[in-house]
Length: 397
Image 1 (cartoon, rainbow, N blue to C red):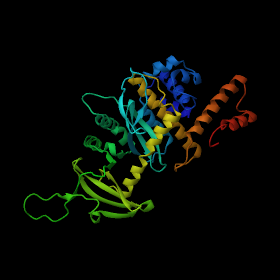
Image 2 (cartoon, helix red, strand yellow):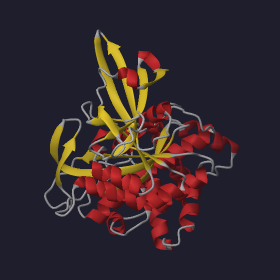
Image 3 (cartoon, rainbow, N blue to C red):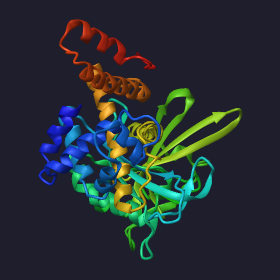
Image 4 (cartoon, rainbow, N blue to C red):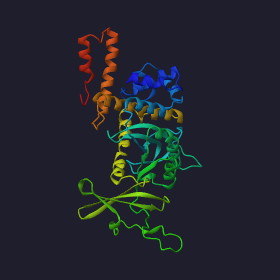
């Protein structure tokens, strides 16, 4: 993928040759290093000194443009994306790091001191996989809430998302707030999300106008337990989950939404979940599919933290932290795209990032070793050994 990275960088007018050389080296190292992704350790696997990594990390780089052009180069033009947003906690020691604060950590189910990253990704529903677009550190401000910062991120990315043909943004229940919904809709996007089970909703009045006074708009509060017959029934999903939908008004949003009710019975107990879309015409099953696809963003967090050094950044200034977050996830994009190219399919497949990193490490080691020994890879015997040992130690050889 190095040739693809160079081609994309050449197409970015804001990137000069020195920075281009650094980005090629950085992304190449992030897919094969062993251990922690500290500056000193990265320098052991690349051609740059640790101080060079430290200096260049502070320089701005347009990762949004790079990721957009990278996906445009590697994926078919007819690929239809949806977007997703979520935040992830990152442990960070020390006291001088910019943005250090108390953030919710889902693994411990409580707030902990550290850093937080907000990620907007693109999801290919057909291949059922996600690609990072923009990661930002959550920085607290006196005149804005954290929801305001998430909403601002979406608003800034809206032109890029619409340029890629994205219309829908999927988010979990935390983002089901008035400020965020208004920001998404104000950016000409549609939100697919989840509601609390006790959300305050109103039926729309469907009766005839009496001819007196202001026309009636609403017809009482929605009771999902006793008024199931007022919903439109769409059959069942897998495992006996009933699917219902209706256009209702959400009081907290001050707007109408397409509500989807998922209802099931287990061991004599009835459970339910409430999904919604601000697009009133979107099919109920499509809303469920988009919300399920949102979970692919969790695999970006997992694989970035385990394999491309997302949690290992030693930088303290916000500019360097921003570079590290995006570089780590962009390196993950490269591995996923190379796997897709290798399999020559756009259908859902199983990918092992650990195996790809092992291959990259093996190939880098053999390149250096063969170069020192003066061995020509065009030689049939050498090429056979190279191919054999590229998969040495890989999980899915």
